[in-house]
Image 1 (cartoon, rainbow over the protein chains, first blue to last red):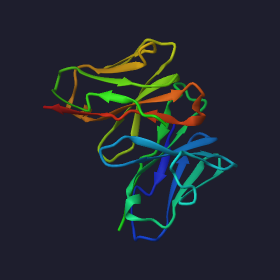
Image 2: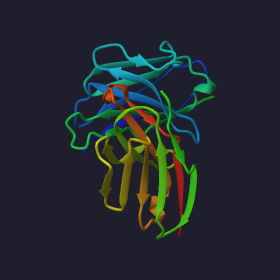
Image 3: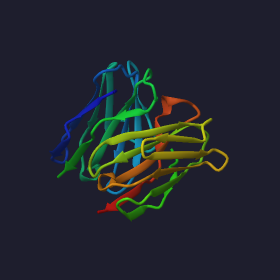
Length: 117
Length: 113
């Protein structure tokens, strides 16, 4: 089945630094990948849609200059949290859809737990 | 994007019993999907039901969809301790997969041995 690899799984960084999270589709090509954020005991909120070869589309209220997205190839999207602050601490999850997959479900990465201290 | 509602928010049952979770949504959809999330982990796709389908089965899972009421239910039969997790419904809008998924608030299911 379709596999999405996300890393790191856990990262702790100091306030003001930047953190890069990678999301790779391992056995399929993904023109579009999605980045979600999940706060404790809450649901997933879509942050942005990453499009291969073009600019990402951000949801309302998500700062594009703070959350930089790069989708340079059909198998890799990266999310960089710039100048991180404690309020950015959250669980970040990427997903991609295998367009040719049988059930058209989305495959999710295992998530990245970001803690900003 | 708007979020759907799920109920109950938390459900605790005995092993072997059936668990039913409900989900409501607000917009037109292509399909509705159910996912499971174990604590602090990624999401696992369970089942997808298309807007023109009313019921679907997969193993111990049964999903229904009522587009007139904009609601869906997930039934897990003969529950096991390993089913303990959070369950989310997610809808793909009628615009297709370009807009990602809109998630419900989730149901935290606890199966007591």
